[in-house]
Structures are given as structure tokens and as C-alpha cells.
Length: 71
Ligand SMILES: [Zn+2]
Image (cartoon, rainbow, N blue to C red; front, side, top):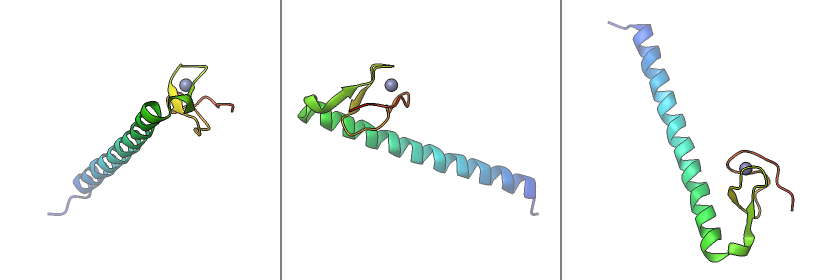
């Protein structure tokens, strides 16, 4: 029998999974880009003044804490 509560719960779970996957994908992308910059263009790394995280030079905000980076 159709139980809307269970369906809703399953849909929620599904949505959460998709969000987690998207988040993971984004994190991997950022990590890859940072690693690329560190290995091949170490001079293009900008250290976040707030948290010390190594960001790609063209990053407008810190990938770690969101601090606005100046060029
Ligand atoms: Zn930061």
C-alpha cells in the first residue's frame, strides 16, 4: 500500500544523497585544481590571510573559509 510518509522519507534520503554527491564532486574539483596549481604553478598560489589555506590565484574567495581574497 502507498504510504506517503515513507515515500517522503525515501525522497528526502535520495535528495540528501544527491547533495552529498554534488558536494563531493565540487570538493574533488577544487582539490584537483589546487593540486594542479601547487604542482605546476606554485607561484600562483595565494594563501588565505585568515586561515592559511592555499587557494588558486584566480579564486575570489577562500575555498576553505570564504574570506575575500585581494589580488
Ligand atoms: Zn581562508
